[in-house]
Figure 1 (cartoon, rainbow, N blue to C red):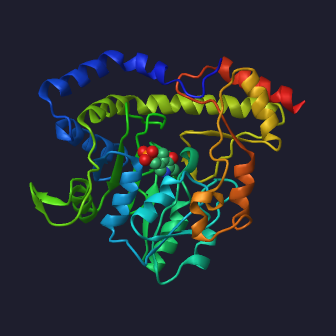
Figure 2 (figure 1 turned 135 degrees about the horizontal axis):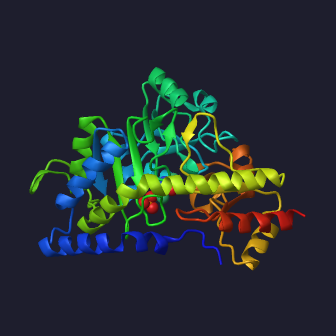
Length: 366
Ligand SMILES: *Cc1c(COP(=O)(O)O)cnc(C)c1O
């Protein structure tokens, strides 16, 4: 059996340290935010090459807060791509704004800057590029267009902890960036978690208030806020994992290199990498195939776990039909979504495991 992701393997490595840290949170009973969250915020901001971090309870909350901190609400339009997890789009709707989609580029799977100008209107207030699968969008081009139109850029970096763009880190490239620490993400908590990262103190201040019921001081609610606070236990776990993230990412990259070598040798296409992406962190190893259901059945038969991220672009989902888009509107996203198959990839995956997966793919191709 080859797992899709081996979280147990990761736990074994940090077990003693985690148990000690969790016990210490219980001893001093600082369950909500507290010193662990404050320390994590500092460490994660530094990791992202940004000044500040606001620790929250999910990636979705981080996206919602980023939009609210920017003053975005009803009547405003926010541009993103339909090739994402629904949370990106849901957060725009939570803020009361209208999502506007543009297609992705086929080499990066991320927002196509060339498609932006055509949809920018007087109502456009922000762009949310999604660093899909662990690969950063073409941020220089996006930032240049945004600057010209005076629009904010919020990175959806929920899949891109530690990814680099032309040598610069995801989280430091837009005006704000949002991360998820859902357990399956490259940096995962032992429950829900998220963070908003920025170098603008005004956004940090507002996001901190909104995260904790709009309080400026205790019971002094200067605005209507939310309960979006991070747990102390999650912060303690994340601090331990953050120290190992680079080593774990290097292990994912090594597995991706083995995939690329073996797939290329077999005449199959490896996961795509855009030239601007100087560190793809392989949250997902995206393999494209024409006959996906056959390939998937063959992998399942050999107990090789796999996934699809995602079978439908957001504009084709029933729950989002009211946005007014239809099949055919975003041909590249639709083409990719119909063919993507996520192969197992995780820190500690062996060459032997990668080669077993590729052998199974070669067998179906024949
Ligand atoms: C996981 C994810 C989110 C949402 O994060 P949660 O922590 O699950 O709320 C948002 N956007 C993308 C691209 C994601 O992968």
